[in-house]
Image (cartoon, rainbow, N blue to C red; front, side, top):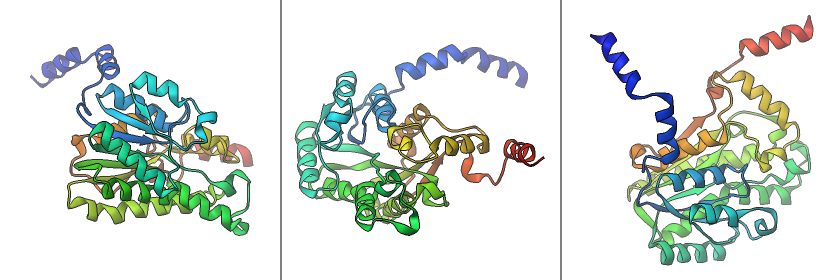
Length: 294
């Protein structure tokens, strides 16, 4: 009896049916409205998240720094997802306040917010961690972490964030482990994850959830700015039981956290890294080391 039931389920859910269902969406964000920060080009995590949010029925605004107008392709994404664009510097309070006012006017309030903003100035200049330029360091913390606090603050202050909403900030395991070339970005992501925890209790009073998603190293424009990124990517891929999680998978996971399916999850750093965070060493790496030293 159990065997026949298993066959019945297999018959109902063939791979092509699952794929087609994924492409058409499940309506997980139907009727929800939000703001997605940080999309720059097709390689961006925020870009993939915006595509997935559109697929799942959300209406949203896209936002990035004004400089992205000459570096990115945000207009194309906006057209594809029927989204509006509001350029704002996430380190400037006035810009964010005006953005939230615009979102409230256009969308009538928001149910979700995605923070995918990060830049390590010392990392890009390959400055050693023990010899940081402190002006760059402060700017890195401001762009990559304090901006999340600002976004939440202004969403609350303007009354733009609806009760029962969900906020996600993108992070990396370098917040909790030492990756030497990640330098001050590890500090920035650690601060971001702390901000998530600190806000969780306070936002919970209004049923608003906030979480960080710690994503695998991903081949984005920002990732390419880290010296030795290709080696880091390969190392993580060999170490992870499921290999590195790609940007599309990250987008799908983010949608699940933004949706009501995760209505009791808050204050967490959620690892989406193919199991990398749980590993010490893998057979693949041992084999490579044996070959190198034999």
